[in-house]
Length: 165
Image 1 (cartoon, rainbow, N blue to C red):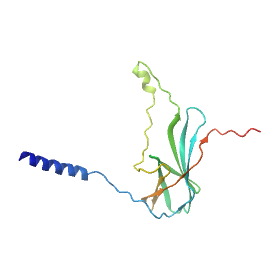
Image 2: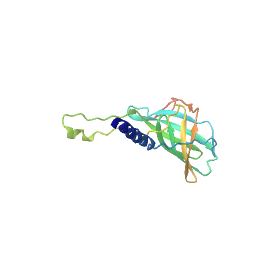
Image 3: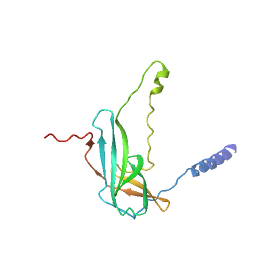
Image 4: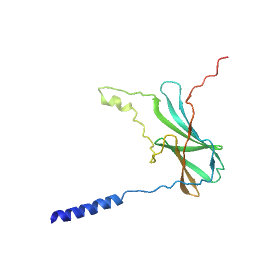
């Protein structure tokens, strides 16, 4: 008899915990108040060892009007959306090609100068590798737009040298 009450109390408690999860549903806008033309992403590398690398997500747009781009979610990461004239750009830094100065010593105090690994600003969305989600604000309310089939452009290696003459 005691086991019966125990299982009832346990099931009520577990259902209560399950319902307390924050499951805020996100609805993607099927019609957006602007037009995106030929979106693409382009990996880049500094061209020198330890100089850094990343991916630029580029969204050329028309009719930006009253929206304020907030962030871009791409390949599991989130970055701030920056507007340059009629283009929304998201710069994602990758851990490839970063300079790693690590001090290893048998004295712990000398290792205090080691830098911690950077925290990744991860995205809550699971999307394809060639898709992104643009978060934007309009009249104080946040909206989400999924952009699929981004074109992958060739990797740019900086510094670019002028062609020999």
